Image (tube, rainbow over all chains, first blue to last red; front, top):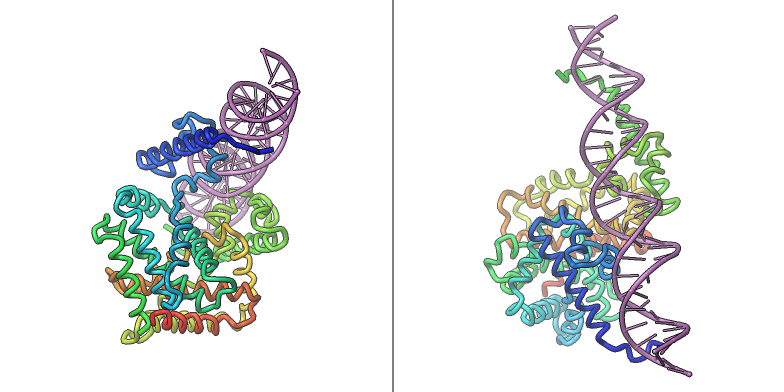
Length: 191
Length: 191
DNA sequence: ATCATTATGTTAGCGACTAACATGTTAGCT
DNA sequence: AGCTAACATGTTAGTCGCTAACATAATGAT
């Protein structure tokens, strides 16, 4: 009997979720990821360490949380199916970026800087990239062919390279431009 | 004064190194990676858990140990510099494979099957791939351009996709063939 | 025989993470 | 209002990967 579920409960959950997340990110940037303990995060958010793990499966997840992936799948499906796959992915990536880049550019840069400069998180980033790849392949239909898989993997590798270059140069060339350059490099790599 | 270093010492070290590694791989395949504890591995190898960590920095490393990377760098350097980068990497990868594929194909398949089927190890695999990428870039000279980085990343992504497909299909299409197909797919992705 | 080096073991501890159980707080029903 | 079931949170104790500090035994050089 889980009927009406008054949403103030969910609001409260969302509130502590955000409080934990905010405390974590602040502590991470203040004193580094590795030296920050889950207990500290929990204490800063006013909860116990068990509550932390009820909201985030691992310590890494709180630093990597993003909502970009599901958006990407829908954008890709909306792209003309007649285009070559690489172009479709490129278009979806750039379109998705536009929706956040204007408002959240600073946060995006800060978060990715933290990730790239923390070995453990960098590892997880590649792992998440593989999850994104699975998601894209499913959005393209069942039983993807081997060449399709290779193409998707290459496109995501290009995009990741762009992101890494972006944070390494402190956001100097803007990310959309870098992604475009990356895809152009991809098409020329074939020659 | 560490002069002669009688090599029987090194032989003994190599022996225990191999004993630990063998015990670990056996236990991993018998009862799974996650459920196998470092203490069990150490006990099976007749050492203490501290000795284990003196030989392998982490539990993951014992499952991922390979000597392919340095070989790859020299092979790449030996390849004609006039070729397009993707072709050079492809040639180096295939040439490196030839040297082990005949004798160690079974072990290679088993090890990669373990890795691909274990989430934690899969993560580390991508991380190691980034290390390989760094190594290739250094072998190509200092200060690689952005397009070069993209190309290398895409080539390694293609190769990884080939390896994953190889173990998923239980070694059915042979790995060198899959790698060739992957690179052909790469060149066509550009169109 | 002595002494420095090296490999190994022992112990204690930290931190991420889990399981078991307890407590309080809220929602729905009578 | 009062009872009960559901749920969020806390407490406690434990496992496991991993590290540091110190102890011990075997080996090699003098």
